[in-house]
Amino acid sequence: MNSKLFQQVRILDPVSNTDRVADVLIIDGEIVAIEEQVSEFPTKTEIQNCQGLILGPGLVDLYSHSGEPGFEERETIESLMQAARAGGFTRLAILPDTIPPVDNPAGLARLQNLAQNYSSHPILYYWGAISQGLQGQQMTELGELAATGVVGFADGLPLQNLGLLRRVLEYVKPLNKPVALFCNNSRLASSGVMREGYDSIRLGLPGVPAMAETAALAAVLELVDAIGTAVHIMRVSTARSVELIQVAKGRGLPITASTTWMHLLFNTQAIDGRFPFHNTHFLPYDPNLRLEPPLGNFDDRLALLQGLKDGVLDAISIDHTPYTYEEKTVAFSEAPSGAIGLEIALPLLWQNFVETGELSALELWRMLSTAPAKCLRQPPGIIAAKQSAEVTLFAPQEIWTVEKQTLKSRSINTPWLGKEITGRVLSNVLGV
Image (cartoon, one colour):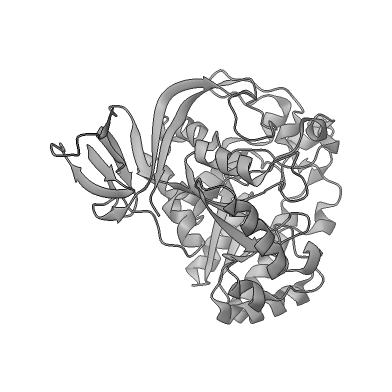
């Protein structure tokens, strides 16, 4: 028997919309009791004084990248799972951009077999590719992939062929699986490496206009309006996109949307090193701030946060994108786009939004747990008696330093490397 008693822990439950302090008894992966004070428990129960600690549903990530198979030097399935667990994630959805990609049932089976070698959580979901080879030219056998267990369909890359996208949405509609789309017009984006605006001119870097995102998004919304297939909009990064999504939702279009944690925390000023976090400063032209889509301008970041608060945007994704030290240690304009984040997203979001009062604790936890689960059409984690335990224990005031030795990920491509942050996940319980 495995018995744990969390005493006087602050419980955040977005499903019941409750924020309270109580004792929680978990036996063999099931929540047995939630009471002001649990007095009866097995003799060998592990008892933990949790004053000042947070207990919430396990976090859920909508989309992140695995290196394995194909780029094991960046990340393996094992290291990805360890990083997710260390960051409080009990469920993780993996994009299909492995080598070979997950564009057929055999590719999916390969990833599932790799994960079976490790008994530890989190639960892994797999996005099936929309197009063969992620080339955006010919659709995959969507029905076969759906039958073999993908959580939904996403290339993780922009689909430029609107004719193909139309057929995909028509074909997917009866399959009842989410379709996640990254909206970006490559011709408008051209060779840009950061968001177009005052900062891109001042820094001498080619800019990506906001319309590269919004023009593509407008086309997707037109297709959704005509066809009626539910779609998830990934990586929203501009204020105008938030406006378009708000109008579309107001008209009843079946869409959900997410932005990434990095786009919430940073704007283009960070690339110049002018965006301090609690006395933490970043180097100018840090290649770890080269993202896809690029960081937004000042107004974009504010609009994304407001969009989440208003429910226009549904969830926060991590989009954990590992690269080796050699791949990222190049000039900003030459660096591949992406950064890791599974292990540090929760503490940094908590310190910058909950501690400052911009978001409530329940709001942030919902955006990272039950809301992403809903976008994936999966049941949310519930903190209630007689429920299977899927919980994360978080110490919001614990200080630690982000270093290669303290990270579980194989990659260290983050602007916080070598920096001290406040807040750390202590443990997870997943009873399945």
